[in-house]
Image 1 (tube, rainbow, N blue to C red):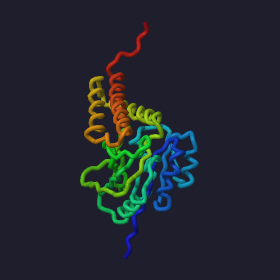
Image 2: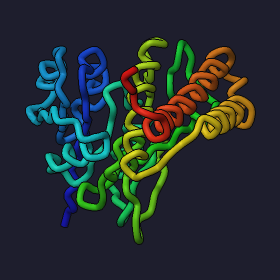
Image 3: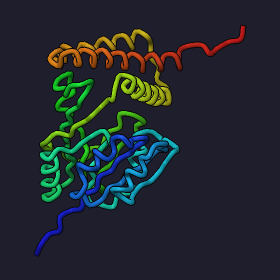
Image 4: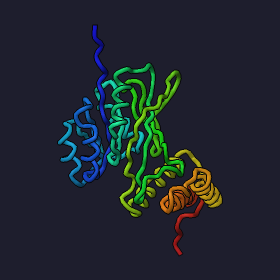
Length: 262
């Protein structure tokens, strides 16, 4: 008696990713059973690119946050396993082999982590706490899903569930340029502050400063970001800035007076 190999889907949530999507999907074309793309209102030709690879293209323009959007995308997945990718990521041949081996010999109640290697400002970042940046991306579709977080969403691991490491890097082309970094960082900071404000949390400028300084020291000194050269220094400074901004945003919202007419 032969046992059928479980089916495998790739799922993505996207917006205006036409310049990245083809290169991403080329790395999974031909060896996955299903590709699911959930778009949040692209104005470029993301849809046209996606439809070259799959007919399972869906749209949800009422952006609910990263976690809820991923949960909605997963509701369209029919395969036994789901592999999550972002459009700016690429599956290496080594990672492909590791994924297929895991799916072919499934372990009970197991979620798989993938090492991610990021290209930032002209260099692969091997330190700063960025590598190996293990992310939980492969799991049985009926076992779990992402949580409801608006930003920095995570796959829910509960009860008897286990995690296991895969080998082979997921290449991540993080930012096109500094402007792209600042735009993405501002979006993450706003979502973080939205989430904290909704929970009744407050902040202060001193909190922001302390967390920002701690972020820089951890990345550049403790995690040896200095070994990544100028890019390591710049990334550590920018990360500290982003940390300060999100606390400052929350402080402005919750601890300052609204505008008054003179």
